[in-house]
Image (cartoon, rainbow, N blue to C red):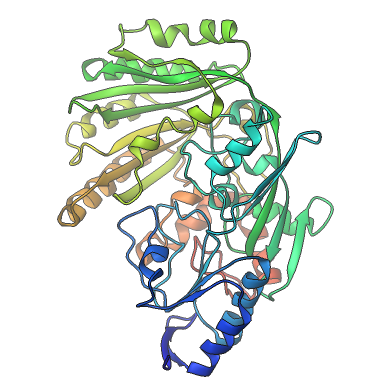
Length: 467
């Protein structure tokens, strides 16, 4: 081992002496990886194939002690750090260039207390991990819409999902969190302890520390009526208008996604995906308008376990493809928004890409915008485009198309992003991050000043301290 060139937390290059690297390695229980090590490339690879950054060091944490050691080391040597939970974040903030990557992927245990209806899950767990354990007891909590999404990033950004109509966002179901702060100390954040930090963790992203475990409130969730209905593209306007009207009147038991996508046979189609809890007989009545309209090209709505619902979109979000995403929140879906999406979708450059509306959910809408750091409580849905392709030579055309769509859709939105969808590159801009938090931004800055005044945790949708 020789002296190592690293990136500091202010973006400069520096040399880290061999003795310091060896000291870190000795302090860890898990492995310390460098370029050239056998597991290095596999570990630095995340869901989005566009992300190709090379950390100088990767700490593969085997427990909280390793996280503390890594944070203290980075703080002492002023090294840029990034934190990997499930690694599913589209902007790829889990991986830094030239710095130290704190990898929680091995920390995936989930412990369910069926009597209290709670679950304690480590920071590297995915929703597939948590759902498997919780559903063994007929329980679940709101947890995104793709099974291999990490619990950490989704929770810290807010957490839209299939159960949000009845139970609120993921962050609304968070009971406590274990956090390694920039000081390298472990705090428990809840309504009873460090309540200000707990408020900020529920939507404020990874700005305040490394969350090593999450405690969630679980709810009884048995078999649901769920699935996808496809309509011909010639009826896309009518289908999305039906979607708009349907979401405006859904009961709490229902949550939805409306989309334009390309079917496996290459034809553009409109789609509505739903998950309806409660009595199957009542659910069949609620979903009847979606199933009778058209008639549809395909009706794949069936009674299924909630764990199966969580995999419905997995085939459209395959790990390793190249992804680029843009989104905004919407209070309503106007005719103009529908017309614009349909017109633009006809020119979409990749058949793997899709545009969507994801409903926030009735219970999520009833929470005060200042109750958690997630502030978009007046939004009907998130509008977004998940562009996906395989060939690196097609990067420019797909990114340009997505950006142009984002601009023409902007007048129909609140102009505010779901923070998990904001990129971390310079062209994304601090103003978009500030706007994403709305009236909560200044309180988040105050928290940053208190818990991370040197901005150690900056490789994210960053809230900059002012001290």
